[in-house]
Image 1: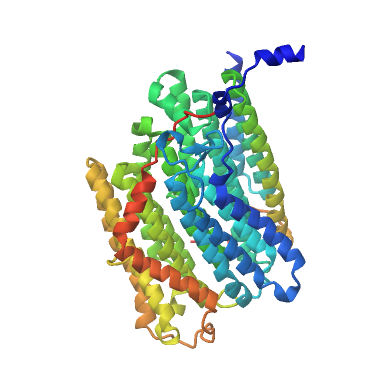
Image 2: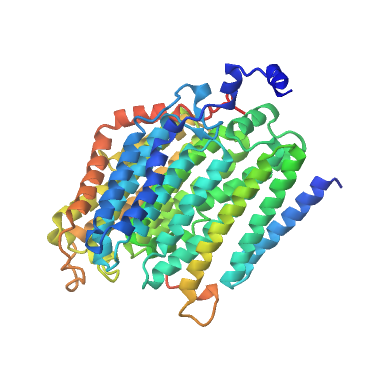
Length: 100
Length: 518
């Protein structure tokens, strides 16, 4: 296998693990970590495609994704903290004031 | 030695042109709205507490100026030169069209906010207005993106601002829940969108709209790269369906819309939807135009499922915000017809419908804002019983908005639907099914819209409603109501002029080329 194929397989695997984590886990922090995993899979794909295509655009895009992911982490953790300050248990199944 | 090297280097004007001029003037709306974020935050710091009410006016003026500035912005009109900033930004008639919609709506929403916020007991601080302006900037930049990097950053700019705004009510569990759900599902969808962009980048070697389009026009989906393109388009479609809240990716919509503060719900239902539809109007018929056989069937099915699902689910709702959010889901389906039918009329019809959807949804949400009580009362449809006795004007405006949403002439909603369904019939083949489903589901929609109208005019409230003592809306909210209702009727009567403008705006789709720069 060429190096780009290996990188793509790894990236697809990591992305799938992240997606499954969001869908299957019930702890909001773990779900959030899984989203970060998905974003890092995207970064890996961008880096390896950038190398294969001989273009810097992939690398630049990774920097953008990293920056935005950092901002998203700040806001996401803020929301999670605000939400669970008064709760003992952290389980997204409890978040159901609104349904239907 | 240096001079000998310099002597060999001759820089001609053509070289300089290749580097690309920096056309600052093309981004006036973004400078004003984005700069306004800083201005409002600073003003918040400087103003004494008693003068804080000025903030909403400052942000209104800045956003209105930003929308108006699209008329003096530096627009390279011709097809081959319609992009600026090294082909990153499309500065064309469509950018102007969307600046009026997106920034105009944001301006009206900041104007309507203080009345609502003070009634529910929230001090309107600078952050609120700054975040709304940041969201508006992101929405507009999303519609003018001509490069997936700008697309992504703009998308995240307004999404991040909206996460905070959804959870803005400090004592409301619903509001926190809304912010959390929106955050989790929206970033989940963004990851899909990004992975799709990465795959497209891998196949085509670029993230620039023009280059991707040129590659796809030459190679279509041939070879191994074709598989990457197909997977990429599929992933982008998942992200798109999430963001536009198409069935079956709509589950977050009613919860998020219900829990968020009502002005923010309006901003999400109008601004976000307009921005995303417009951005994908550049992406699907434009960038992915050469491989339209691949994505059209997917969007076709999504459009049909969304129209049916959104309208059927709306029927059983009792909360007006949830009902309007399912109605927003259903309208996403009508808008998608414009993407699938894909002819001249469908593109301009889609933009026209966006304009109409903007004013009529704004009118409906502004009435909800005016009627809502301090603890979130007055949001049930039964609370609207006898509204015409308490607030005849509000009941009248709500009636016009709902008639327009249902698509009754002479309101703008009727003409929007007529253009879009007409475009579907014009393009023929299976697309006629889209128009048929659209017409049938519009009848279902009429049922639940009329239910509210009947409540307002004929039903008697069972007891004194909790919101009966809410006075007339403040002048600023009244102004927003007037603009929205005049737009709903005026655009219906002057549909020809608006359609002409939409036609001009839609003419640029798919014409982004890479003659300049890089």
